[in-house]
Image 1 (cartoon, rainbow, N blue to C red):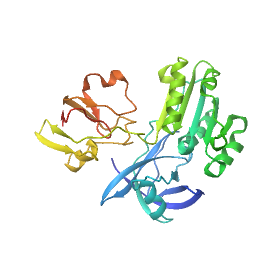
Image 2 (tube, helix red, strand yellow):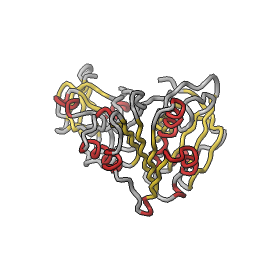
Image 3 (tube, helix red, strand yellow):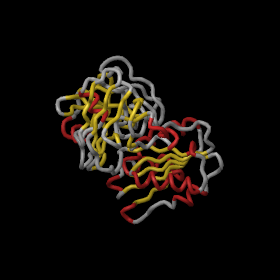
Image 4 (cartoon, rainbow, N blue to C red):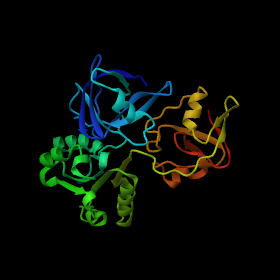
Amino acid sequence: MTAQPVRVGRVEELTPGVRRFTLVPERGALPAFSGGSHIGVMLPDAGAARRNSYSLTSSPYERSFFQIAVKREPASRGGSAYLHESVREGSRLEIAAPVNQFPLANTGRHHLLIAGGIGITPFLSQIESLQRWGHSFELHDCYRGAENAPFLAELRERLGPRFHGYDTSRGARPDLVALLRAQVTGAHVYVCGPAGLIDAVVAAARTLGWPRHHVHFERFSAGPQAPTRPFVARLARSGQDVSVSGGSSLLDALDAAGHAVPYSCRIGGCGTCEVAVIEGEVDHRDHCWTDEDRAGDRRILACISRAKNGHLVLDL
């Protein structure tokens, strides 16, 4: 994947914990993208380059700049902390082309958007598209205090009665079952935010019998993980053994051994880093495959899943 150089044209402090970065191309034009897309931003990580994904918050119809809004995470491994502490106006970065793993369903009769916290970001570009298309939609935004909601005032004014806000610091929360039950047949629901919110929306949709393909979600983190144990991955084509420590991922171990696997989200949410498995039991930890997808342990998502019994043989 070819990285594109960009310059940071503007840095805005939207809230005490969220900054918006406006990225302009160093040369040429920026690529097209659709509502819900993200870009990969190359960031230094212990002397190497690491790509972190951030939703595009600017309009899909604006090609002269990209915007991302980044919340500084207390447990940042360097991505959000680096952007907040080290990136200034005029800084130069490299980005990967936009990818959309959270697209709108063009055939939806109505689009129910549910955001939690910084999970509002992918909806900003989706809303731009929905308004351009004249599609029916509504936004339900859960936030912890207005001072922590970077786009609250803008969205209230822009969407009017289509906007529904819930200040969770005051105990306000949507009744998800009632909300989904009230939707018209053919509606699609989209949710992004904390794992608890996503899981609750998915559970409510399942309880009410919503078709699986009408329920869309995007996670920002993998959520709580079971303890990780070291294992060995044998690469069948070369016979090389790659050791995966308890604190590392198969993806990182393969990369360190010179076998770079394409990836995007790094949280088991997109399927980009799929690797074929020849032998061994897989401890599947992804969020994007069904039980049918995982059956037989014939493939693994290298960014997050692991070996159950100490070894795997991979078709690499």
